[in-house]
Length: 222
Ligand SMILES: *[C@@H]1O[C@H](CO)[C@@H](O)[C@H](O)[C@H]1NC(C)=O
Ligand SMILES: *[C@@H]1O[C@H](CO)[C@@H](O)[C@H](O)[C@H]1NC(C)=O
Ligand SMILES: *[C@@H]1O[C@H](CO)[C@@H](O)[C@H](O)[C@H]1NC(C)=O
Ligand SMILES: *[C@@H]1O[C@H](CO)[C@@H](O)[C@H](O)[C@H]1NC(C)=O
Image (cartoon, rainbow, N blue to C red; front, side, top):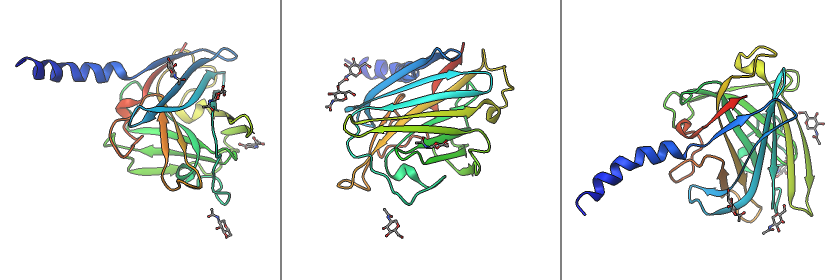
């Protein structure tokens, strides 16, 4: 009885550390795949979301698959680097490091194929402090293709992210280690601006805050 609080206190850091998932990512065309179906921060039911990752000699390839999307609700006026995270989006944070990163790429895509891409400087590791936009993503080879099947409730975006953004030279990706997380944001005309969130590695606390870099999963390119 009296021991219980001590046991709980001792167990929490271990549980938190164990809760951060990891993934081995092979060279394309093989893929490392994750899926998630829990909401953030409540860990309630969330529409199934899959992410497939592989690398080739020049880029990381990420395919985001949203099942059971019902509204596909976007702001049609938004274009590159507008705040698409206010509507419906899937996204990743990526850093080529093994520690909890202070700088990482935030890449997001909406069901209408509009993208947001910026490096985030987050020295507190819990709240982005500055945003460095990538202003010419297509020229940089940061490209995406999106297919939407509304009757099937399905939305797939396949994204190419150059290795050079992370100081990985062409052909040198094998063996590199990364921190990444994957997120999905859902909203609808009825609920906007309220949103429903899901994540591969759920971030704690309410309101939901994805910018907690301790929660980024561990990725190894094998
Ligand atoms: C959610 O995912 C878990 C495993 O990741 C699985 O066991 C469970 O059946 C899934 N639930 C639904 C509703 O898809
Ligand atoms: C979710 O989507 C899957 C296929 O993508 C489908 O089999 C399932 O019935 C859907 N569930 C709901 C609740 O719509
Ligand atoms: C998009 O722009 C048009 C024209 O300015 C405006 O009428 C409309 O309300 C805007 N839509 C949204 C969702 O902001
Ligand atoms: C999406 O944007 C990319 C550029 O990132 C473009 O090549 C593609 O044609 C666009 N449209 C679709 C439907 O994917």
